[in-house]
Amino acid sequence: MADVLSSPSALATAAGAGAQVQLVIATLLAIGVVVVLISWAKLNPFLALMLGSAALALAAGVAPDAAVKSFTKGVGETFGNVGVLVALGAIVGRLLVDSGGAGRVVDRIVDRVPGKTLPWALAGAAALIGLPMFFEIGVVLLIPIVLMVARRSRLPLLLVGIPALAGLSVLHGMVPPHPGPLVAIDALKADLGLTLAFGLVIAVPTVIVSGPILGRIVAPFGPQQPPESSAMMTAEDVSAMDEKRAGRTPSFWTTVAVVLLPVVLMLGRAIVQITMPEGNPVRTTFDVLGTPIVALLLGTLATMVFLGYAVGSGRAGIKTSIEKSLPPMAGTLLIIAAGGGFKQTLVDSGVGDLIAEYAKGANLNVLVLGWLVAVGIRLATGSATVATITAAGIVAPLAAGQSPAEVALLVIAIGSGSLFFSHVNDVGFWMVKEYFGMTVKETLLSWSVMETVISVCGLVFALLLSLVV
Image: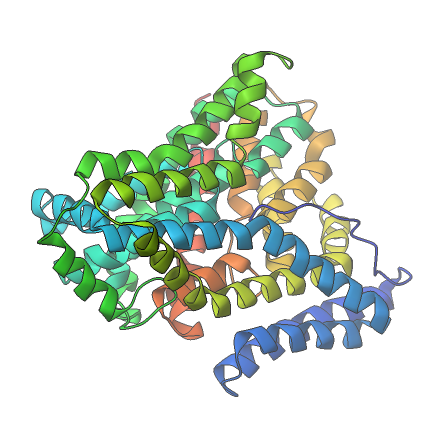
């Protein structure tokens, strides 16, 4: 998740053994409150996350005004970083459906790719899109396609959904130019090119194991067909898509070009930042155009033109599509924002610092140590970026004596640890749950297991590669 590491001690009370035990108990209690309220009491996740944050503050002895400020800050930052992107992605998704462009893409995939290889095709497509793109953006762009492929192919939803999610998540956690790996590269003074090369080598088998292979295992534990109504698509959308096929629709390549426009802009930004000095006019231009919110806004405008006006939708038709896209996302956006508030309360309580303290005295292989530190912070705070940044800072002194190859692998090990077992304090958990229309239990048995497999595979493949480089 893209977020900014704030002062971890903003809400922390005086250090000491008793305070540390209290903080651990408070964290476990808060997570338990959220799970029980949603799973047993059937409370809306938005309210459950707010109450979980309150329980954490109360149990940890945090002043009420400080707890409110921390939660509010997390809500604001998460909505600013994620919420706007989700809203723009929802508009793109709706126009894809209403124009018939999504139907074109689905037809091409289903007609030309045999059913047994559909999961592999989606994993590859997601990994390609995920190379330059933030996870949240990739999710909102790919989920409509995943849902429609599942409907058309009649394959279990998770059989095609898990490979797509794995492709996005692996690239987000392990490979630059994503923010976590880039920060770790800077902190550890790693070679960017070497890290990128090793990251791609490790990403391939990791995506295969956590995507198509794992998808077959977890598919029975989730919905067998897409929900009749979810945050992304309803049964009426599918009927409208089928009717639109008979009329004027954009071509397959036009649709693909429009969807990939934000990807190209963000990839271009990453490339020029690596290859061109600051102040270069081309770099300055891409620094703006490749910013996620700008790239996705331009993609939205291109969608309106080429998947709207170009196929006969007038201003009224496009206005209707946009108005239809936003109301269904309101509940999802609130849950995502509340998840950010819960995460920020955990971060500011000092949980990350506490885990870091314990890790400093451990005598372990540096790759395993970096992975374990990132795992602990990820479990406690729910933030992959916070886990990566904090873990990189902790093990940075150990990296000084390592070879360039070992330091590059350390970046990947930390990134892998930052993905471990996404649960109720992670914004990504709620995005996947809402978009796929799953219960908390189904999300834990599928998405959370997938993230854990990715994390373990990343460490294992990094250790294996360290034996030959």
